[in-house]
Length: 133
Image (tube, rainbow, N blue to C red):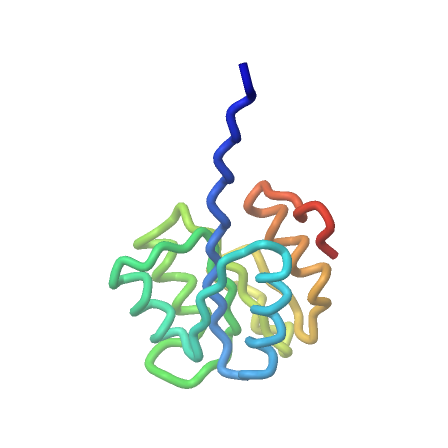
């Protein structure tokens, strides 16, 4: 009898919302390298629209200060109401913005890509794939 191949677990989906395209693209690429499926949004409105339209995500990573009708803090509060099972990590270059945020998960900018990827893996109970850096 031959062993049956084990199905590969589905990759975790992370929605990254940041209006700074360079930060968003660099972080998204680091997440993809670590095995995540990444959905990119340029503002919190776009991120919320994706989720409300039925887009599936396992974690939301959002900058706090962004243009649009809502900011990252409001996105986190709405996610806590509508999807409490989805963790939200907020980031900002202004650390005082993390105080009193509707999530206890805050990353100060500039952040280490490696450490922040490791944080998200940990939050989702995952490990870096073999050969990943």
